[in-house]
Image (cartoon, rainbow, N blue to C red; front, side, top):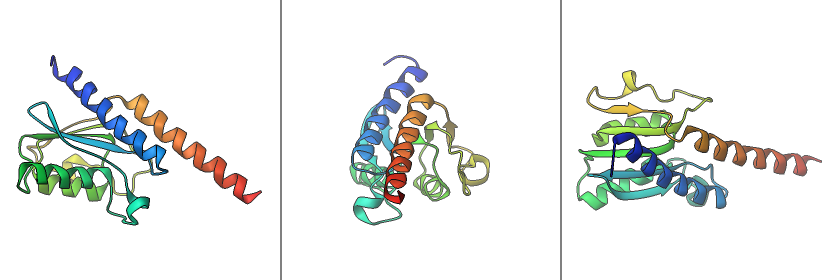
Length: 156
């Protein structure tokens, strides 16, 4: 499939498709895919509102789906592609899943104990940020702009 950066962009584009599904359903548009040997084994997007579950982040749902696919709880040899850097909860779940690699698009500028690889992750887990960052940020910005405009209409 080519060099690693090309692969990363390709799989992040698939995570962005998931994020767009979340956007269409009124969820914060974050999407994730998990791969093993350059094959997608799970796809997910935020479903917090749909499921009324604060833990229904794209990463958590993708981890569960990938573990079901593999038939075990550890995601050794896997990579997650997620459109926004993981929060503390998702970072911990990724650590415990023993995933090998985390690739994310946009950085979370509203961090509340956010992604701190050196603090939370095992040293064997590699990370890379900024893959399709602009596209990820634009989708998030569009969502929050739409939400702000909707809330302003309700207030007037």
